[in-house]
Image (cartoon, rainbow, N blue to C red):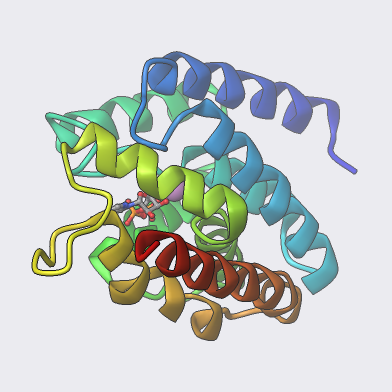
Length: 200
Ligand code: ADP
Ligand code: NI
């Protein structure tokens, strides 16, 4: 599917990400990047999108996220130099960087390109379902946030209602919608069970 050069470039991107996110315990670890890259690739093939740009941007999508980096601008500048060192074309660098800066759900942007929309779908899919549930409590714990409290709106359970239960409807692609639907249902069941056990 990829040329030898593209395969080498993706290998180096993967190593770069492994180094950057090795120590994360907020649900944005290397395994998150790996799942998003895999999901994005699958959707890109299904949609007939540019698979190389999609996979590269998926690996890199959380670089420069203000929640994860003390100095996001610097992280993005370093990423730029790294991409230059891979001998990608200016157009490829531009496409990848455009997707990364538009992607975060927290930033509320919708990427213009199909490849960007696919990375956003894949990132959102990894925020829902069983994995999404695990990541939410990992993030909440890392942030010192309560699991749940009837009078406190700053809890991990509240995050389901604020964000996670809205994501399935925001999918851009057919395949994304299909995967999200099942995961959405699983979260609803989890919440139902959670409240049954909470009021034991
Ligand atoms: P992105 O990966 O696009 O940057 P977020 O950073 O908003 O998206 O979310 C990443 C992960 O962190 C998700 O799994 C999400 O559930 C979790 N998360 C983000 N904000 C909160 C919060 N306030 N409470 C619990 N989990 C959160
Ligand atoms: Ni992400």
